[in-house]
Length: 329
Ligand code: ADP
Image (tube, rainbow, N blue to C red; front, side, top):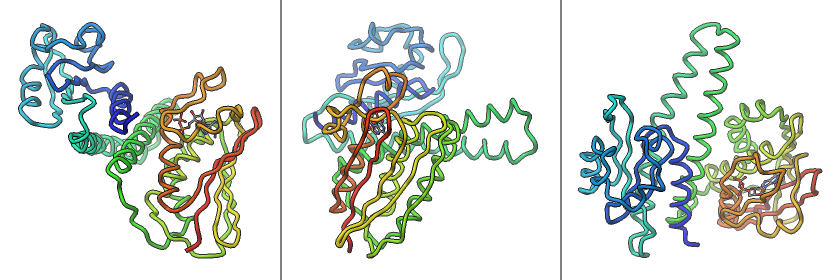
């Protein structure tokens, strides 16, 4: 599987979850897919229109000017459009979502970067607005519930953007911005984004990290992603009331960090594959748990770029420890 394919699948997953109408076209200008919002707004079934030219589909008439602009060279367009029933929707047109020959691949990565960038702005504004609602006075219990739900949905979206950004960085063979790192600070930053999720899941997180016996050098931003992914998983695969503990240990030349949960655990036969892109354990325990299968592959890439090594131990039904070693400077 090429990284470009990974990006394509990730984009489809992402596009399915946003409320904008998204129309993806292939390099010939034919429809590659419509997201769920597009299917609902246009009363179309993506499977029935895939491979067709938008101009041949009457329901898509209001979108044609934007599609033409996208075809004329704009990599991605986001506009408000009035549909035939006079409803107004945000529409995005994304073109060239085919698996391209190798020489075109950087374009896909750039395109993805642009989309992520564009979508982070409204998301951040929405987050600030929610904070303002909370700060504007006492809320009723019901209002508080809605605010919390909105906050969690936004956090979940932002989590997916981070995955996408990390994937883009990996695909462009991104470099580490290394410097001395205070890992405890890095973990605390990762935790600030996850507190709401832990609370919602009824999971308690304890930090039991010792000052390392040597100095550590690394990319604090990428290491935050590593901890973010591991802690997010530990919460996600834990039962209500579960405990997650973040620990550290050291030997002569390296320091280990571990995230231990009391969750569902993992059948042994899956363990060798967990860090492969898109690998997910699929059984009755995981059926209701959402995920992309990308987090651990990102963790492994970042840790290995630091000269480190990942590890996992797990007992089915009892819990798991995911962690990694970093070399002393
Ligand atoms: P996902 O988005 O599916 O969680 P990851 O790449 O982060 O993707 O993890 C890959 C798979 O490893 C998961 O689908 C899950 O089956 C398993 N896994 C990861 N972390 C845990 C954990 N803490 N407890 C149980 N299973 C886990």
